[in-house]
Length: 114
Length: 112
Image (cartoon, rainbow over the protein chains, first blue to last red):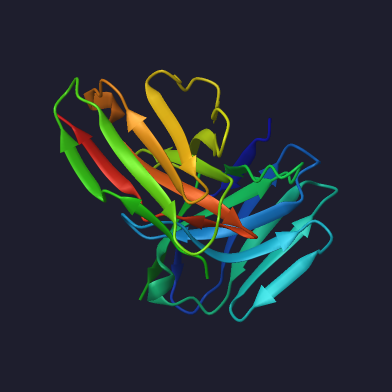
């Protein structure tokens, strides 16, 4: 099955600086890569996603890049703000005959230092 | 966006009892729903895929007789933790796909 690795496990950055979180996946059939933000005790919230036919996607301060050859994708947050502090999860999915199963990375605890 | 609800949000039970958690898609139909378990400071681990009209598909290492899943309708899936023990204490989250995955708010289960 799919295996998703995520690094780093913790990340602290000064407010205003950029944060980068990286993930690798094992199954070349994976074709959908979402990123989720989870605050303590809450449900994961989708913040951005990318499909395998696209190399990069940007939404305001958040961007995701995908390298299918190397099987890795990254989340970039620019101009970080204190409210960006949370746990971030990457995930990978193989869409196959309606199977929507997601495999999650191990998570990155991001702390923005004011 | 689509809404997924979960009930109860918190439950405390005694060891040996059974607990039922409901997951509902409120404004869309879901032939498939997913059940995850999340231990403190860990990732979401998929337990099983709930399929409307057929048996659930369990991930390796998840006991199907302990975690009973019933997909009763196109908007409701239930997870029953049978004979719960303290090690079953966790945050249980369901999700349903509607283009993207929509997660329920989670259920915090504490087994005494």
